[in-house]
Length: 303
Image (cartoon, rainbow, N blue to C red):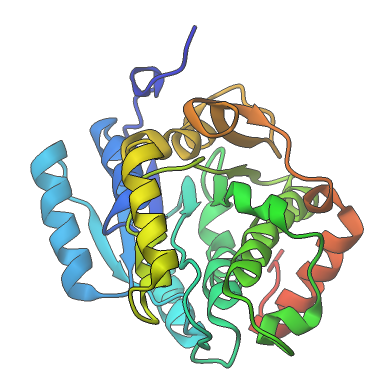
């Protein structure tokens, strides 16, 4: 049977936290979970935009999500947001690490890390570690980390990439941040698989703000215009791009450690389990990245 959102089971009594909820994949993920009766917390950097998203989600689903202020590019904000969640909720069944930035000019996080790996990976690493005490209180907790097929464009990652030591290439840095997402997903399953299930997902080519916002930050150049046209002509809708995340988040018999992508050439269509790149499946590189990330963020698995 072809998978569709209709196959998502009823989620009454289950709580999910989704990062990056104001548009695109995060918004569509939160909407689908709300429509299946989950209690959803949306975590975003801009309180005004996140509040507006909450109102739109409530209008479309009939259920109002909770709002959590979270800036993944600032580890103190991650700590504050996680502490608020731990104080506010008894448990957390599902964490969807979705938020991200793509191909901006060279910028740094509040803590001095290169913006893309700092936001896309280190912020989510720290958030996950700090939410483990909530996750382990749920009967079958899941963590879904959203990557990209762009993780296949790079052949490794080094400690120097966390701070962009040397020449900066926006697309190389983006690919490395997405590689880090997959390495983290696998290593989280290896280290914490006795008390939670870790999954990865990628949306294929989906029409979201991500493709145009970052590349346009340095000015609307030829690259940004070309990407905007390609997105409009080729990409699948954001709702379809969210299907792999939803599949990973809710399919009951999915083996832990699965990586999910679109079914048609990993480009578009209904989700299925796919294979990450060989580099992304390197356990020694994953172990090293985990060590670097724990040192960089000051947090590790609390159990």
